[in-house]
Image 1 (spheres, rainbow, N blue to C red):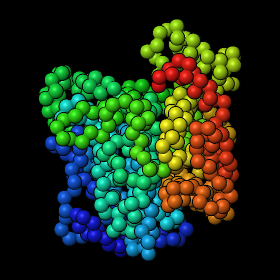
Image 2 (image 1 turned 60 degrees about the vertical axis):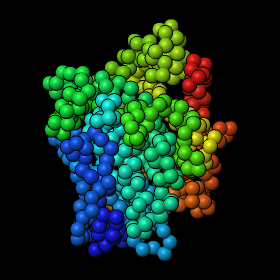
Image 3 (image 1 turned 90 degrees about the vertical axis):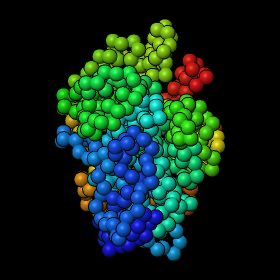
Image 4 (image 1 turned 180 degrees about the vertical axis):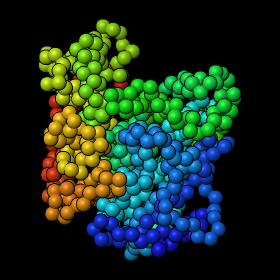
Length: 536
């Protein structure tokens, strides 16, 4: 057993071994805030209460109640979900260890910090302390009425509360509170982006890694929060526009009702829910002295408010959209092909949807011609439509973020291209149904090179290419956490240069590590936005 004393009392963890026989200390299910129940529903988290005696920290705490996007099982979890986990090589090291604070993805709808997808074995062996967290999701975390009772962004404030707890207590686990790296993937990447600009998180971390997600991505913020709240209430049988009545209604609802009705009625042939991401970050109103997590315009915040002195690493996977499209099935793909052929506005990015029909048609034609080269859309060139999706949903936003970040902070850019049997999300999404043996690096395929998936456990032989790639990736990530530089020496055989607006260097992270520069596709998108939206 392993024991530490934190602000609230004594924790009993355990000493465990990873798959390579190396030992580390594990502390699970640590409360970092009071359960957000009753009058605390939709509100900012409150500090946790102390306990008497020794609290066992050998089991995960409840996850936020949710319907798992990848499973057909009944929803599970609890509204009482504000728990974190700490894994450390040594609670009393000779020198405090760098801390890596993981924010899970899942569209702000599902996921947790548990070891089903985020086992600590690979990162902790690189001599860092790893923290993983749960936070409120869906309507429980992001319903907003624009009132003091339900101001919005509760799930993001949970993340801040967890960061504050870590800064206060991580030294007891051997971690350095002055060297915290926040990192996250997908909606976790959105979250990291918001932490880079919110005053609530300033000073709580030293470095940041954004994987396949930026806070300026189309789904990362909602402006129709009140309409969404009214619609959900009506769906639950309550039709009122009175703020107080709405809040009292929502506060009285079983938490199961709030989550189950979040699902869209749209299903694919595989009966996989298509989530409409209605519950995300909002621009908050000010109420007295209450802290606002975010307010204003996301792009303006990125231009003006990125915290100075924070080292930043940002990138995406080579084939981001392949997995989710494969999950939707062949009928969905054929429908998208039909739209590409028959809807002139299919290729118009979201930023231009309020433009005149004439301009939208002009923009859509230019983008369609760039990708399809005058050919009709078909299964033969569907890869090009996937490339359009990638840029429309993520890659262009990453390119714009890089330019803004590099102007004020040390910044590194990457493209993740690893392909092996560790590409576990490709397997979950059944990409082989479409493409046979052809391999891709889909959205979230980077995760299994950083974490052990305990629900899809694989043996990793030390002479395998999978082990080699895992070692490279975890060294790049932990070197960045330790030194603010992913390649501080020559042991990985490459020097990863900083990103600059002039040179646009990135690291291609595959079985080999190679340096590249942004290509024609990114330049094309930049030219489109410069021509039609120069004020962006």
